[in-house]
View 1 (cartoon, rainbow, N blue to C red):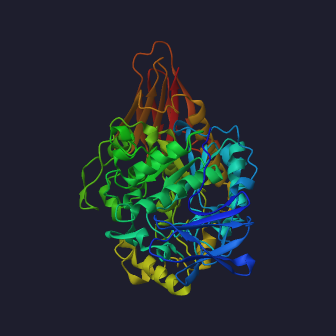
View 2: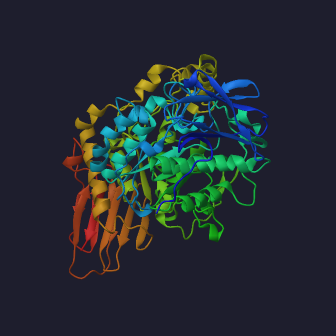
View 3: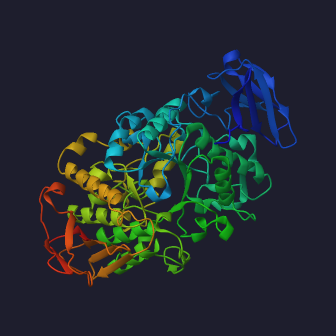
Amino acid sequence: MIPRFRPSFGAWIEEGGARFRVWAPDRTRVELILEDRAGEVRALDGAEDGTFSGFVPGARAGERYRYRLDGEGPFPDPASRFQPDGVHGPSEIVDPRRFLWSDEGWRGVAMEELILYELHVGTFSPAGTFAGVRERLPYLRDLGVTAIELMPVAAFPGRWNWGYDGVALFAPAACSGRPDELRELVDSAHRLGLAVLLDVVYNHFGPDGAYQGAFSPGYFTEQHRTPWGAAINLDGPLSGMVREFLVENALAWLHEYHLDGLRLDATHVLIDDSPRHFLAELTSRVREGVCDRPRLIIAEDRRNLALLVRPEAEGGWGLDAVWADDFHHQVRRALAGDSDGYYQDFTGTTADLATTIRQGWFFTGQRSAYLGGPRGTDPVGLPPRRFVFFVQNHDQVGNRALGERLHHQIDPAAYRAATALLLCAPETPLLFAGQEWAARSPFLYFTDHQPTLGRLVSEGRRREFRSFTAFMDPKARERIPDPQDPGTFARSRLDWHEAGREPHASILRLYRALLALRRDEPLLGAADWEGLEVEAQGDAALVLRRSGSDGRTLAVLLQLRGSGLVRLTAGSRGSSCWSLLFCSEAEAFCADPALPDVDMSGAEAAVGFSRPGAVILKWM
């Protein structure tokens, strides 16, 4: 049974009214302002732990309130469950128990079955809302993914934002819909067999509307610095309540919205020198507090730290998986030739790609020229599903100056081959919305800040690329889209009409076919390293082979660049023979088919590619 969740921050409904509780250890008087009761003011009772609380008889869901601190304010609640008028307006009491769930039989998706589909609520559908995402859920089920991952939805300033400027961490952004509309999205996904994960940001608060500091400077520490300034206080004085605030935020999303897991943004910036790292505490508390079904905790972390996903009993922090960037960087270096920034650390050779797939990441302690020191640890013993692989995600597309997707910059045949490599590798695959039909729309960096802050953001965005080869000339940097321009957001929206037209429809069929093979072929969907071989052939070809204990073999032959002959040796297999399961260059998947020459006449198979492509063979 799932333990009942009782909040300790924010406002929540109890028998006969509502209880309010806020942490403000540096304040002597905290007053509750009831906006819908003609601004009635009630003083809250202080406690030794720095919290102030009170019960208001008759208070109901939908009522709005704010706090006044020693005469200053009024301020919204740092643990507000909804900000209907934006992050600077009053908070609204929300009662999550009023929603009628229909997912009692839902048992979640295990890590071994996870195929992630990352999306941004505002750009995914024409409506740009939770309801718009919900309408597309049958499409995602039929595509073959098993989980959607929502980019951050916590309330942010303005009409649109990536979500990483969130400030009201417990409140869904009003521009995406009301809290119950997010619940409807999750409930509908579960009915269709899809899990829902949410990206959360605990490494910083956004630059506008973060009122946590008004309640206590203890939310921050000058002992550590981050790209956003003072770090979130995880190990200094008063850090205990800050950690509790963040842990409760995670539990609130999982309990109040029935979410299946969280993706933790940039965990390498969660700086914590205390004996038990915050991530270990967070993961443990989630395991203890939400135990009815799998709730996955996935990190984004550039350090290649094995301890992130090792059990706490083995000295790790116990997370379920980590985004493994090295695969993406090798693929882009190999196919698009990227060499600026962190790409300078990667060769993109087939040998290094093979190593990355065999290990889960490439850097295991070698020196990084980009970082100026060693990077990574040995991942030996970690199962492949602990590593999340991708060839696109919001960062790797949106943090490019012009928001280009991989398929915008490489040959379509090479893109099909890269897709096959991603979906046939044993690691957990992640797709970024639109890549499955090679969407023409970019995914750009967009914001809607107030003018003064917005001007600084626009200037900083262009300054960020001044050291990149293509943008050293100031005139070239003027081509970088202004994040504050409404057109930048509009250009990032997906055009769903494309998916039914060529050449996009062919790519969509390719994704559906590969995801179906991953689901239906036990060897292709195997969740361990057993029987896996990854071989580089020359400077442009790879062979992935999975062998079962019963003698069955499945082989993926890939030509990533140019043309060439890829050989496959099966060994002594008696009278059995190879059969062709899939070819990326068949008519179903491209408007200009170019079938490779496949020789399956003996134990040794050979595929002659006239251009990049992928072939999957099975030995029966």
